[in-house]
Length: 185
Ligand SMILES: [Ca+2]
Image (cartoon, rainbow, N blue to C red; front, side):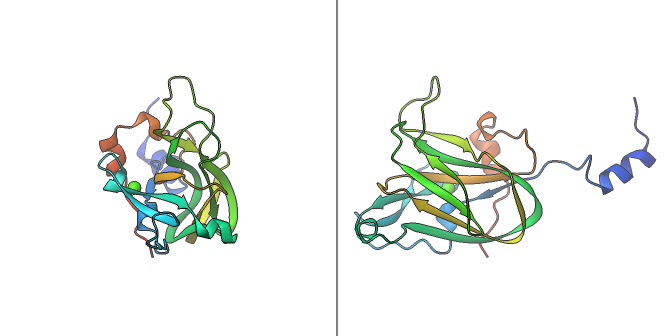
């Protein structure tokens, strides 16, 4: 069936045929990512050519954890209004303790990092993990990553997509790098 322009235009206007939208958010570009200078404390920049933006963030735990302070980094971004599915590119050792919580605008939306290894997933490999529930975003959006009590999680990138079928695991590194990055506010 051919759709006539007179039919297509109103559908576009209400978003039914609008193309899916993906954005990248890079934790290494969060505004508030205190580096204490102590290699055993807080979070550190993780540089590697295999990472989007050639860097990520890793938590090294340490004194902050011992003091009971939340070991977190924070980024603020302006996001176009929409319902988004969230994916995080993280390292998974399958040992359950190198985890971090992702909170958005003060609400925890999920935990990523170590989880059960999938078939064919190598221990310590980088991979995409999906946050279970979609989130509604509109404008000013605060992302917080909080390292789990034992520290040591690593994260490269976050992608938000308004397409429930989007799957970054099916994209090449080059395709992922071309996804527009939202600059921190
Ligand atoms: Ca990155």
